[in-house]
Amino acid sequence: MKDIIDTNHNHCNHNHSDERRYSPEQLRVKMKKTGWVLLISIVTTILEISYGYITNSMSLLSDGYHMASHVIAIGAGWLAYQYVIFHHNKGNHVHTSKTLSYVGFFNALALAIIAVLVFIESVE
Image (cartoon, rainbow, N blue to C red; front, side):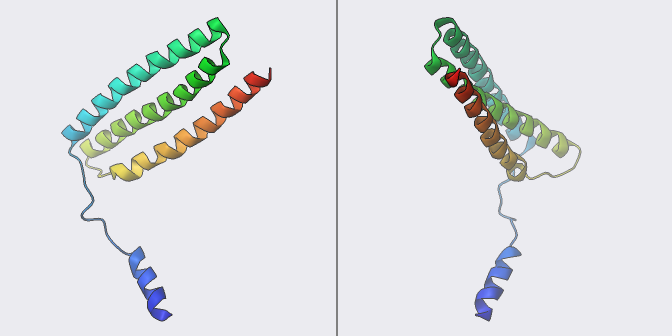
């Protein structure tokens, strides 16, 4: 039993020296690509929601608001890239994976809020 406890405890003290780190140039390329995806997603979202209101289509509206949650998540990812690049340039070595891991939680929260709004709109 003691071996199991020691093994688990030692696992907590592992290091991530083999964790992949990106150069600022690589992050800028990724940020630029993310920016293009963000722009396309924003245009698609606006078109879907607008046409959904014009045609009174709940299907288009719900998909448009769902797409808006993706816009929020992609935008948060784009901002996270900027944050990481900014701190890397200042000499602060911020782990990209740790910084970007908060984006997933933010997306889930935004999606839950949008789902409630779509439900309220459907009931009305």
